[in-house]
Length: 140
Image (cartoon, rainbow, N blue to C red):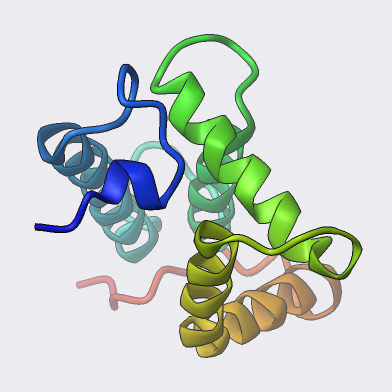
């Protein structure tokens, strides 16, 4: 087999196992489903917020989860990823290693998603009308 810990320069004492990855993926998946359902049923609930708030809260929570400075929720793994992202964006100024190249290749594969993130930011800055509180589902 391939020694991923050696290739990606991961400290073997604190790397994430597949159980930890499934735990994080499951938690973020439940959070995403909750956000979608809250957005769809925003006009039916007791909390009357515009439906556009829920995706913004979801993205904000994910960003705060990533840059959380407290030593909880896989701190070393999150900051390994942030360090690698920094090395990818500053690649012309230092030697590029395999982990940097691999993450840059993954980001190239996600270019459509990242462009949609740009459109999302433009929507929240320029096109959003906070007064429209109607949900996506019709009221019966």
